[in-house]
Length: 638
Ligand code: ADP
Figure 1 (cartoon, rainbow, N blue to C red):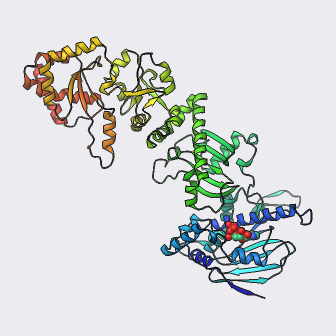
Figure 2 (figure 1 turned 180 degrees about the horizontal axis):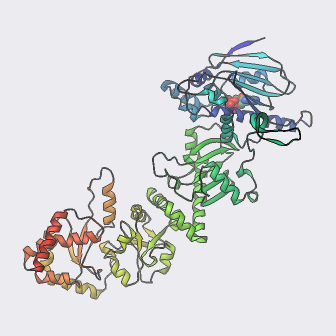
Figure 3 (figure 1 turned 180 degrees about the vertical axis):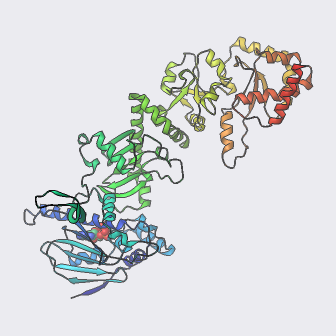
């Protein structure tokens, strides 16, 4: 006898969303049904094992088949099956209705007609109504009666007795008619089903089998292949590999395996720079495969790039690009995390708030950074390769967290330095090589290494053989500012006026030169008002006639970077000090004419522009500068 029953209210609401859905990710229905089939087999197996031999242990498998004429997909398993009550309780009622979160989300989604709820919640069996206009479930428990459940996912479903030979469940999906928006017919294609199984259910522990058509060479009567003659044959194929690589024993997994896995899964043509196979068993439990690519993914810095790791729960794929698993600064890392601590149907919000997720993420972050430090120690050249691609992001990690990750990241940093020319040095090495009386870790920044090496401020450090970190990336100084010190030694920009340590004698000399040329300095200051805040005698220049230093730890490079930010439009102005080299003939020339205020004023701007040029800046008023130079030529050549 056929009975018709109404769906429970909340089920109706959810089904309504499903049946009207044109959710682009509707392919997940197959994952959901396969996962249910796998669970059902788990349950049967467990019962059979505890039945002391009464229930047979079958060859467990999940079968897929497609009927193009009827436009159906069938998923069958030899699992636990469902009784009539089970059908009513499990399929007529939505299991998560107890969850408040779900009820309120559902209400919200209904009001806004928001289909994202489908992506936010694993919606199990009902997700099949995204692609189906009708579903039939034929099922039988061990020693039980067979039942047929049918529904169009609207108001009601029917249940009737129907004989079934084997224990288990067979679900037949009648596909919706394809429309402009969605091509449901694509699910009738072998390759599509195969791809979906590979993508979502590869690691299901039971074989997922399907009859596939294969083109094979025709054999002659002696069993020899006939050249050029092929025929289509039906072959039962297992579509999934069943054992996830990350579930194997660590010592069974070779580097080669990891490389191949990475290239297949993350579509890279090159082996990864490094792979990590992580297995954590403690308060949190997870397995992870993590990869550091050997080159920058082409879209890493574009908006289209989505960071994140794949998330699995006990071998079942939950979510791609799970951002919560990895901090932004490690966005170049590829990989997956499998943790039984998550349920399959966890919602996006729950994921974000999940303390387990946070713990795993912190743990993964630490593993990756430790691995990087390890490479740095054992294979510095390899680390340099890594650094050239991703070093900027590590520095961004320090900057963007306001120094909170200092302890974790500072020893992953490497820099170019004056004494290491085009090589790199770590902060620990820098500190180790410091002279006893050196108070600071010195650095200087600029557009690129070549420009930096020409900076006049470096002269004295070069002469005294004091090493200076050469910072050629915009983020560098900002990251260093967040670090503040390394192992209690402060960082100091050599462009900062306070960087220069002068002896008593030097100071006395500076003071006397300043006093002797008071009028010159006053005139220059007046002429350059608005450009520099002070004009002083320099103690740091050796060969160059002039330089510009700054105050309060803000450098010219930082000024430039900050002013390049959208909305800043040259609003940032650092305090600048023009320093003159008292030992340079140019200074002498100026002192000779210092009583001629007009002359000094006239050429003050040339001094300033010259200094800014050496700092790698552009001359703003090029015409005025050229005119002044020409005047000087004419004077000199008269
Ligand atoms: P979930 O799997 O998250 O519990 P579903 O809506 O997918 O939610 O399924 C509801 C219930 O229906 C399952 O918990 C299970 O008891 C039952 N069920 C679904 N598919 C099968 C199946 N193939 N065999 C046996 N029981 C099933």
